[in-house]
Length: 172
Image 1: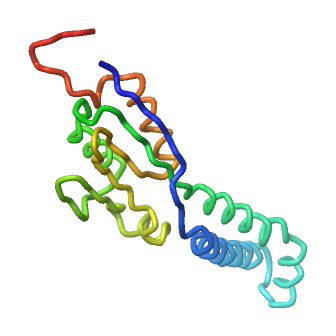
Image 2: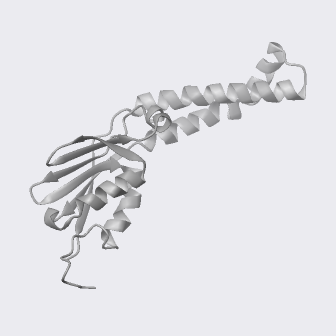
Image 3: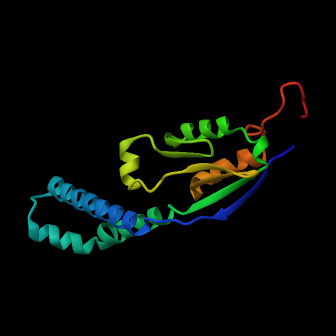
């Protein structure tokens, strides 16, 4: 029996904070990048730096703005509802999260919470990226970022990796 999968939008938070963090980091990076170019190319003066900063506004301000907007918008969340829960291999779902560099922070009978495994990605997401796996009645609800669900959905719908099959029956 194949798994039935439905995707529904979930509440997302932290978009403004992530936007501001990435905008400031990119502004600093572009400031340093332009300063290095001027330093390598000629004598560095603040007057020359100011003129180049204004001249290259698409690089120094617009590019960081675009990067910050796209990064903040990539933190949309979805709930992936998988039916029936009795056929879902939860261990394989946990392995999938481990392979995407998440670690378990909270685990009980019906709820497993994850966070990023490494400090830098956790900092860059301001710790808003916390996927969960919940077992509710006869469905498994996986709350993840939309971009991560795009990796998970084909594996759920096409393959049999997450399906529990009895060891003695071979229905291929």
